[in-house]
Amino acid sequence: MARTLFTNAKIFDGTSTAAAEGQVVVEDGRITEVGSGLDGDTVIDLRGRTLLPGLFDCHTHVMVSHVNMFALLQTPFSMAFYEAERNLRSTLAAGITSVRDAGGADLGVKTAVDTGMIAGPRMQISLSMLSQTGGHGDDWMPSGAHLPLFAVHPGRPATIVDGPEEMRRKVRELIRMGADVIKVATSGGVLSPRDDPRHAHFTPEELAVLVETAAGLGRFVMAHAQATDGIKNAIRAGIRSIEHGIFLDDEAIDLMLGNGTFLVPTLVAPNGVIKAAEAGAAIPEASVRKAREVVEIHRDAFARAVAAGVKVAMGTDSGVTPHGENLDELALMATGGMKPWEVLQATTRVAAECLGVEADRGTIAEGKRADLVVLSGDPFDFVGFRDRVAAVYLDGKLVVGGV
Ligand SMILES: [Zn+2]
Image (cartoon, rainbow, N blue to C red; front, side, top):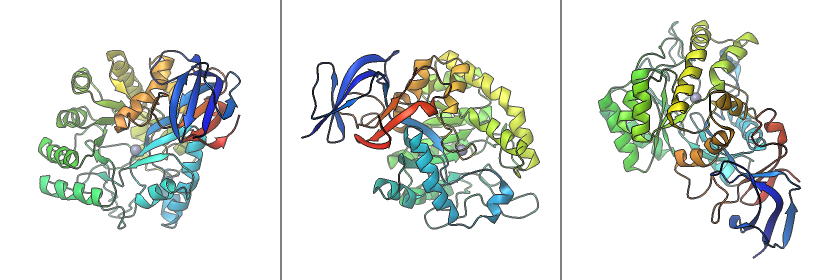
């Protein structure tokens, strides 16, 4: 079997606190050896650059290209599929080899990537977000118009549910149509005009049925959770990750520590809404006001969670912000108090754990899939990080750039 040797590299393996000199051997798409004094049939000289595990983004919307509501209404339904091709390509070019799509992408998009028809990161998909009537995913506008951000189609079922029985049926329906993970809104949100991010949504009874049904079919649940009580209800129900976590209080942080719940902060998202509005995008005024109100609260909550030792997995809400700029999140995570190596661990090993794929990827270690990123310059300097991604490998095959 052909051995590819990556040599003359500094290796950040996803577990350590520094990048160390080393070599990596890849055979048949897997890492087979990590060490020194190794040999190979093909030698790739990284000339002192850093080799990282393929990066993760645990919260993307690859079918969303912007949040300009008026422009979205003028866009033909199927355009979003073609846009997804472009968005996935820019995400991969940033060194992101795995994403968890938090709503929008369906099984066709994922299959197109899996079969190599289009370039993109490996995907876990949720199809659409479960929401209560009047919740964050309910697309009825105050005018009485119904304006779905994601039009319902056979591969992306409607997901407004009320009551445990509807919840159970809908989770099964999502899984039937290809959902790898179930997304739920346990609180209001920013981009929807009529709900409040400080209100909890769904009852503990509804959430218990959700988690039980998903777990029985081998799926984790991710919760859009901004309100304090919505966060606590989600954690107590056994939900895997809290997305955004804007109104985290100390009790919620303690509950996360006790339950091993992941936080996917998406720090770039509220600013993305504000920036888009300032650039002239048609976004409901109420949404822009909510985004402004939560930016500081969000940053403060994140810093307290980090200081307490909550497990953080990198996620951006890309789609709200431009695809390909995902790694802007890293600098904000560092500003919020994470050490540079913790930021990179959150974007590799910890993210893989959040998605339940840690046996397969997320670190540079024997047996792991050879999804790799070559980075020029200091891996702990997050300024211009994306521009220093020199090469990206999937299963040991060069898919972006080159060295
Ligand atoms: Zn989102």
